[in-house]
Image (cartoon, rainbow, N blue to C red; front, side, top):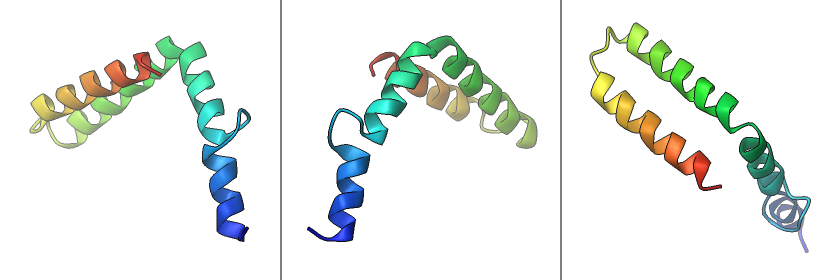
Length: 70
């Protein structure tokens, strides 16, 4: 087993993997994650003078749906 296999195992595999820890954190703080998504979208809208507001809103909705499915 090479070093990259070990890194891959830490990230993806096992119950204590980074992916599982991130999923658990997102699930236990869903309201805060949604607030962060809104804040990021507002920041992008501000920097682009809302030129891409419809696309940003689509992205925000998608991310909120996905974080609810973790």
